[in-house]
Amino acid sequence: MAFVDIAYGAGWGVVRRLPEPVVARLFNLIADQVVRRQGKGVRRLRSNLAVVRPDAGDAELDALTRAGMRSYLRYWQEAFRLPDWSDDRIVSRVRTVNEKLLRDAHDAGRGVICALPHLANYDHAGAWAGRTGMPVSTIAERLQPESVYERFIAYRKKLGMEVLPLTGPGSEHAVAVLGERLRAGGFVCLVADRDLSDKGVPVDFFGRTARMPAGPAALSVRTGAPLIPATLHYDGPELVITFHDVVEKGPLAAMTQQCADAFARGIAAHPEDWHMLQRVFLD
Image (cartoon, rainbow, N blue to C red; front, side):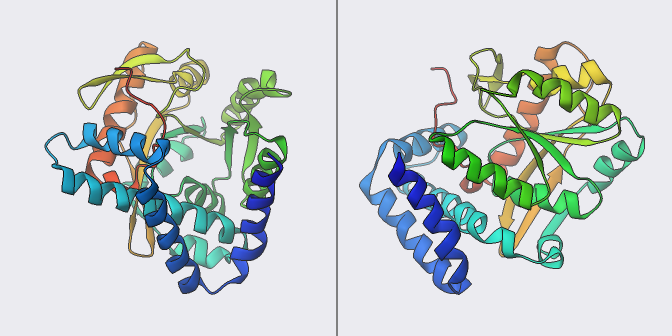
């Protein structure tokens, strides 16, 4: 565990000081080496992508897995460097689609909830939101060792986000705090394409059964705040954020399914940016 902490510390301390083209080439080489080793995470990524692209042959899946791992390592490359980016760079390297849906919902004053999957760089999206007038409150998985979790909390705070724990000390108040933020007109973002609690609801996802957290839907029903799914992808140096239609209020399972459908559209369009190296599909 100490090695993990040292590795993350080296990333934030060393990578941010290297020229960006050098880091990009280095991380691509690392990604390709990881794919060649065919570890558990790579095999899981490939199997998940095979569900997204069921008609893909072996060669296409191999190429897609390689692109997916490069995209995942790009996330890490940016994570180590984002705290040094200027506000102008953070904002200028984001392009949005249907942003009016988000702004109109936020301007109504009831707060707004954004649910999104593990696509591209959601930390960059959160930093962009804060610098354009919508500071983010969110919940984060408690990583191990604790020192790594603390590094991530500090990192996201530097980007302007309020981060509450999913488990452990303080987690018992997290949902109540998010409710308070929404009632005050705030902005809550929740990554919601993988169930971490075993309490998620079944959804149809690419024709297969998966479980996704009902938390975004439950928070929307409890507070009256609109729920908007968002998906992300990379386009050259830009991060593109696409906002989907506001989820219709109803049973939590139906609202969660609407989020899953929006996630599937975004992932199907840009599967190489879906950083899902864990199990999602129940079968």
